[in-house]
Image 1 (cartoon, rainbow, N blue to C red):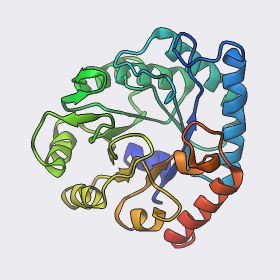
Image 2 (cartoon, rainbow, N blue to C red; image 1 turned 90 degrees about the horizontal axis):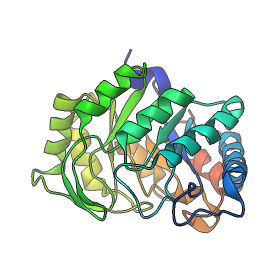
Image 3 (spheres, helix red, strand yellow; image 1 turned 120 degrees about the vertical axis):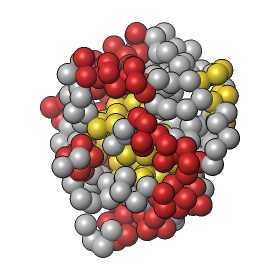
Amino acid sequence: MSRFQAVFGDRKPVIAMVHLGAMPGTPLHDARRGVEGILADARADLKALQAAGFDAVMFGNENDRPYELRVDTASSATMAYVIGRLRDEITVPFGVNVLWDPMSSFAVAAATGAAFVREIFTGTYASDMGVWAPDAGAAVRYAQRLGAGGVARLYNVSAEFADSLDRRPLPDRARSAVFSSIPDAVLVSGAITGEAARMEDLEGVKRVLPNTPVLANTGVKHATVADVLAVADGCIVGSALKVGGDTWAAVDPDRAADFMTRARAARGGK
């Protein structure tokens, strides 16, 4: 059994984001509410998402803007603290994504017992954060040293906020990454958080990777989830579940429940 199957089974998983508030030390951190405020908001979102029936949740620091390629230790430590405080309330598989740092993502996963991580592990990009060149070899070896070798690895092969300097077509880059860098699943994204991946990109990547899970990583909406799941092997959703569809708002329980109703219908009631 693959690591992906061990976490998600044979269904097409719908993974919901728990977007944590800006971490201490970052420009948008709310010092008045502090870490306890981050925890309170995360708890409310987690409760709503689990009640809606999502297959898994993923904790991410999307609001730590401007983003870093090597994350400050305070962000990793705070994420681990918040997830640790919530650990007994989490009833579904959970993952972590410390933007945009594979090493920190594995460190937080190891500390909290996360089942999966999402990050940019491969490629070279011109990005808003500068030249971006992650090292999958170093990151996966680090996971092994931490005892996190069993954590499922979800590789985003079309980085948000960036353009690949590798001019091979996206399907070729994805196929190459699977061979060279052993992901458990491949993710296809839009240009920025909340924007949809192009269907032709999803179709092209899935065509060349029939035996590797391929998930839509951004911008899946209520009106598109059925079309996405007809092609992809699952999806990750965040903004569409929020009040008014606003990435930075709280999860709207009704929107979340409606999304999962549509996703289940698209999966044949599963």
